[in-house]
Length: 355
Image (cartoon, rainbow, N blue to C red; front, top):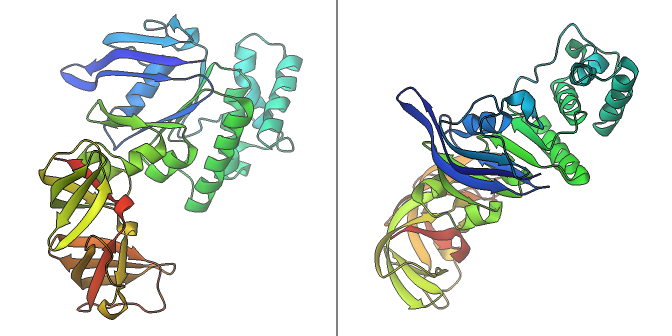
């Protein structure tokens, strides 16, 4: 079932937490609300759930106006950051809880709860207490408890923040697989950009109570519309460059003595802010740099800092365009502070974000 926000505002006294946002979550998709702390994403999720009511605007679920309805009058379920399992109940009893409250008999509730546990791979854990489960298992119990209510919309509030890095990766894959297999409509809140890109059909990035940009993970990463997006969606190096339009689809960006042609259909000639992705910078010793072909896209620099991270090197490099942060997979021949380098910039990693 779809979710629609139309000009929704949420105020707490004189403070505005959400400032007139509009968006649609299509049925059967997973949409993530992403942004830094205090941007309004959790307040927005709570308004979908009916735990908060908007100060202005309209909220619809499956075309039905639910703006003034409370949580119990909406067909939604929510998985909380803390999982909110009852410590005195075993796994089966926790999953049965909402079913029993909705009026199901003990036997029917137990049958549906076992079906829910089977969906999340915990069919053999029904007699265990929450304290006997790992963090990932507790999270699955919380998902099963939400799923058995057969909600029109399933909501996740920072569901992986309490897990370690490896388990977060595993659980986000399981959530995505479950959502796609069951065709669920999911609204997911996180502040983790990689998590959002891994699970989402579409991402809505919020900043200071407003929508900064929305689109597919690839759109937001490769075509950020604002400097904030370029900084927030992955690492980026801000720099000032000079643009010259070559044709309707391409501009030439000059950074110091370096020139590089990038895809852009909107920017005009003149100075502009560009974002340079660290992974788009090839770091080479001057003697190893290949000869230029076409635009001179080599930028001279000097290593200021070098860090070894096992799988790759990280470098801070002084250049005419400013200090650039770059990553390099060549750990077998590390560079050190003071080494001269030639930087080659990949066109897809240079993004014009503000003219």
